[in-house]
Length: 324
Image (cartoon, rainbow, N blue to C red):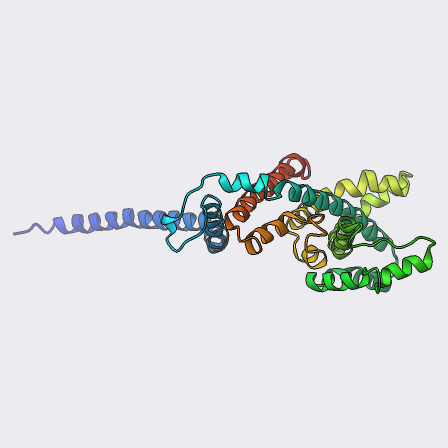
């Protein structure tokens, strides 16, 4: 026969075990919640990372594969492996070095012009007192960026034509000099100027936003100190805008390395190879010369080159010095 005195002891034992279990469950739930909160940003980023891997990693891997085989075949593992032969052909007979020089020339020249002109326009508009005038100038300066590359190339070929173009006509009508043949005598300069006209509005928008974010107290303090306008820009406004200038320049630089449509529509890389950018060289090797291996080799080297340049700019100019 069970002793009745054991029942309270059993009940108290169950109560004690439940009391010990509840904190355990709460602590486990707390750990799970903390773990979820810690990794929540990664869950949100994961879908985009997967998409980026699909649209960049796999095409990049296939491009690398094409660069080391003779010709692509249906049998992926049965293609003739040629090693670095395509790379040698690209840089000895494929015109890769020349196209790299042309591309760097266009990128550096256009980036400098667009940055300087964009900042000057932004400073001029920011100095306008009338809000209506500011709105008018903002819309006016943004218009060139709305023109599609193919349309811009077509319009440019017509307006710059030596026989029927309006720009040569205006030059000869307003000056005593004969208008140059833009597309045959100075094609590279023409490409740079046309790209500058098309994309200066982008730099203008970014720089104008940066100027608008400068605290008025800093500007007023510099005025009280008697600093002239140029000194206010050099020592107050531009240093405050360094992050904006850096980001805008980096984005535009990378985009310039991707230039294709305007130049190909305007000159098709000519005359000869005078305006043959790397992107145009890759296109011609792939679709005109049917040299997929050479085109892929140039593309691989170009990708490494652009990524290296971007990382050097970020390391030397960017995050260490801009946001200090």
